Figure 1 (cartoon, helix red, strand yellow):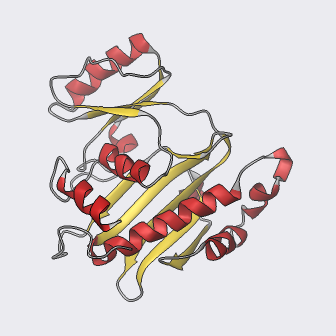
Figure 2 (spheres, one colour):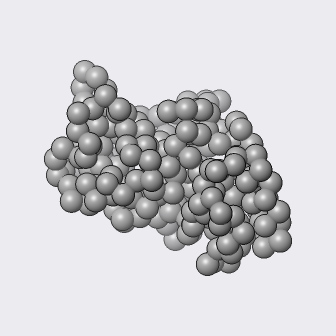
Figure 3 (cartoon, one colour):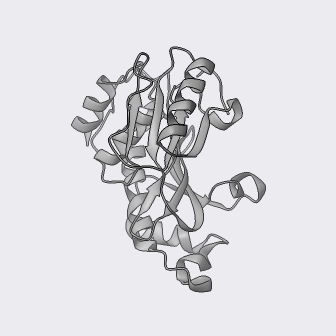
Length: 238
């Protein structure tokens, strides 16, 4: 993993500060599912995406971590409305890259997962009820990283929403696939070590085939002396 993270880190558009597109490229390289997407840099705001809609359009900058707070997200766009939305967002966020993604059709509840660096205990992984439930009724569980599949499954079983992974009201989710996602997040957290501040994957949705990460934020520790991962294993905020 060290070589992959070093290569990814060295290719960031803004040194040490990845945007959503770059975070998702890293997650995809680790085998996690993210929506098909393309980042449009300044001067290429009318470029058609190489995939079918409906589309989601987002402002894409490490300075804007919470895009909805600044009206930086537009959903359910077709081809014509996408062009208009890109023009409007280019006016609102001049010289800022945009991210166009293919929207995912989800089933069941949204989930949040992520990682952080605890100053006393080290890197940790979290999972819980995602989407708006994260703020309305917090339901999260933490473990130190890295972790194995057994421990990740225990995390799911400790959540109040645990019944949704057991066929509640006919839901056909795949908890094993979510467990594998958590194990990967744990490996990533352990690899970054002190260079990690926080990783937020929210929401994560079940599409009927896989768990897809719709939004991803990664903040690296600017005070860390390590410019890249040490081992194998900003701006406006929303």
